[in-house]
Length: 320
Image (cartoon, rainbow, N blue to C red):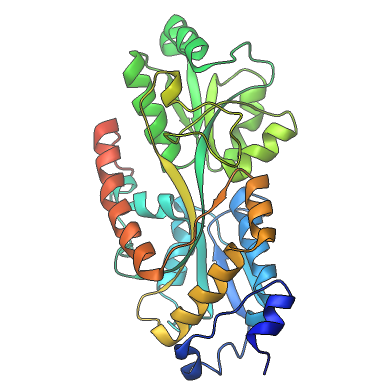
């Protein structure tokens, strides 16, 4: 049996949880990370990083990509899976929490059919323009949108983006068209050729596009500058008072026993706290955000209510 000291020396500190005595057979087969995003996307990169780092304790971790329906195809698949710890759902928790406010009909209960395992990280949503755009600040963008009127447009691919876009447009008295895409990668070309005036993208995906010169970041959505990328100003300091963050986490089917959830939480949280994880997360505009399982679950349930309020404030109707 490998003890804690061995894991510390290998770069993965594994806590000695009492519940582990009841779960010594776990895992005895492959653990599946079922992800609602496409291969190569920011969330996919995060999931694969943690899958690799968890191999010393979870052994074989298989990442499965099931994109579609705002991530709900994967979420429902996991929610309906056997609650045995072998089918887990790494995801952008904000999108999951926003699902009841996004869709008229839900085939599963986001509050009761899934339970939080552990938190990975926190990140702002990025407001971006094309690399050839003359716009450098939020103020300059506001001027352009007012001048273009209903000929202006922006790209969105997830709930946070839709809310931010709608609230921002209302605040400046403009009515740009919200062009909705399946994934953020789908609007990159349109932004680059000027068909879109701006877009919103998660940090995990956006930092890579910015580094490659495909987009230019003009603002972040959190109330304070991100420790991972302090060079970018907030929307708030540029005159738009908003503070909305996204977060990445892992869920399991409800009724998964604590004898499995507690060790899983400990192993994942130990990885989150390593220097390797901090460097990796900072490189994609994220900050490590570990917390207890109880606190993470309470935060998630609060987010479900908060996102319903955001959608109501933004005047966004539910999709069919």
